[in-house]
Image 1 (cartoon, helix red, strand yellow):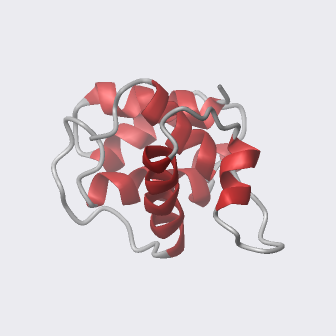
Image 2: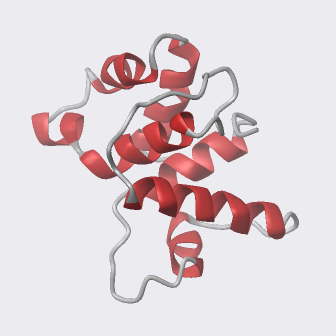
Length: 119
């Protein structure tokens, strides 16, 4: 699991506002750019926003539309393929986004899923 997957799990454990929880979860990352990287953060917040993350109430947490959409579609793919194990790259490929590149979004989705944190 990469650092963004770990951050997502730790953010859920913080049980505060998910925006603040994410900030706490990434505070020890080595670089400032890693701390503020939008794609994994907005993937996490998008799932929280729509009530997909256990223990986190629905709310307004992100303005990102695309990362939230990618995450929700990835959850649907996982749920429709219960006996399949996906790598982040494989799951991204299932979204059929053409040349668009994966930027840690699926690491967040898979970490939450594999740790039983998705409703």
